[in-house]
Amino acid sequence: MERLKSMRKPLLCLLLTLAAPAVLASGGEGEAWLERVSERSVGYVYNATVVLTSGPELAVIRVSQSLQEGKLQQTFVTLTGKPQTLITAEGVVQRDRGAGPPEYLESPLAAGSLQKLDLEAIGRSYRVLLGSSDRVAGRPVRQVHFQPVDDFRYARHAWIDNETGLALRSAVVAGDQVLEQMVIADLQLSGAARSALPETANRPDASVWPGPAVPGYELRAMVGGAAHRHWLFSDGLGAISVFAEQVDEVRPDERWARGATQGLTRSVAGMRWTVLGEAPTSALEAFLPSPPSS
Image (tube, rainbow, N blue to C red):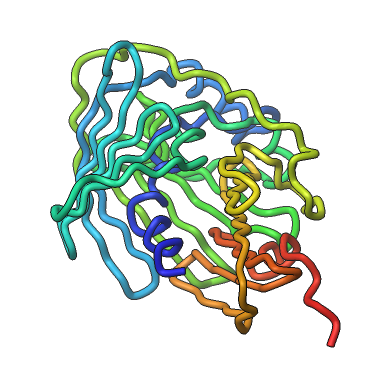
């Protein structure tokens, strides 16, 4: 269980935030502005210092995006806490903790990170409102607000760079409470854009997911086999991971939260189910199989 938590925070939570430009929706003032920005959104080569707050915790991470053999690669290096480096490319996360050989994690989060965001999915799950102009990392940005249409997702705010379309600041909000924030303290672009980001990758057939459909969340990727499987769902902005693992013993249900990220676990019919993501409890509960009858 600790391994699942450590995979998600603090580095992997940046994959879906930083990797893709702000290509979000169409129709309406906010959506129209984003559509114009999306025309300039391409795969930039850059270095950035990122400050991430999650609840009471704070992390500083050095992020770089480079072009390797014509393909974009991201490197994340922690500057606070225990040393850790992640390199994402081709759907694989390489993790180096400074002791022992690097680990290689086949992660749907990495597989879906360096792609444009899904305009239609976001339009179905959020109302997009255009905010005021501002500055982040010394660069002009425009605030964009994403108001959820139901109780299965949090509200989100983004500060989008006018030139590149990158989100230089973001916040996940529940009511009046800020659950998580990310801000780029400095951004160094290495010349002009090099290559356009790919469209969304081929998605698995929805039939490979044995559980119920949850409004707004679409299956984006799946890895693993019968003994251990990982499904990744997204509503275009938020991601939810569902893990299923064969177990020999039944353990009590667990629940935890850290900032915007929550997790639930349940044992059903010889399988241990874990749901993890930046979403309200109502959304996570909807993915879990029903508890065994007493």
